Image (cartoon, rainbow, N blue to C red; front, side):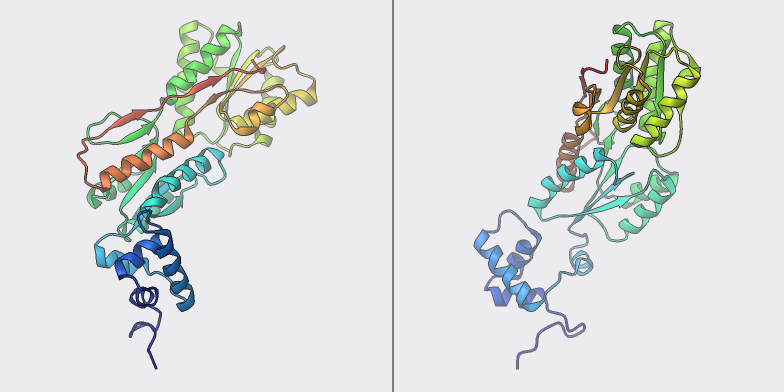
Length: 339
């Protein structure tokens, strides 16, 4: 009777999968990891053998054997935000053909939670890490520096030597929103924001600077809350703002969901958009082009950022010369009926 499984665990081994499918262990490993260079017919044989044996890969053992795992880590602040869903999809598209697993860490906009995630994931010796922005604890910075694991930062830009980042200028995006409202003849301009992560605050700073330069900035028209961003929150913030400052004639919302909620609330209250107040959002989420009126928004290249960041990380993991690289993918103002 042929023994199946390793001597220590009794579980089916990769070597047994390789023998049953008639390929080498290396080919079997690549086939199971989805490496694109393996012929489809061989992939099918290996998958059928693995299924027949009940084989499950052991990533920890693979990491010990190779001194690093066949995985990359992506740390994001939210899994409920469409922005990051689009980015993650693009990252997977790049990593999958290389047979790399994408491990996702959600730190809920909490830098201490992110530090714990970094500590835990580094123990598995990932091949690389994709980070969101630059706001993190000193402990996180020290661990990342000491690990030597290649890192790429997404969503924000930093030209510091040795730092690789891909994104766009959040400050410039806020400035463009302000300039657009000014060009529409609006002068009582408000900034409405929730969540208040560093990127939101950068947008606010760009908006604020432009209004100051135009001589129309009023601090009282900033409506900020650390609560999570949502359509419902947008309606609440809009109602509160208009109750306190009914002369507001233009609003920049830090996220589209807030702006969408405000448009719906304006409809309930009979406030004309853009007749009485113009509205502009941020990120250009899919529903924004279908609101009534259609929402003007700043379209961000969230999928392109994920794709390019993944490509840049692979280049670093492959040992290609790298002295830090900043790639500004820009953004686009989508002018619609709300302004």
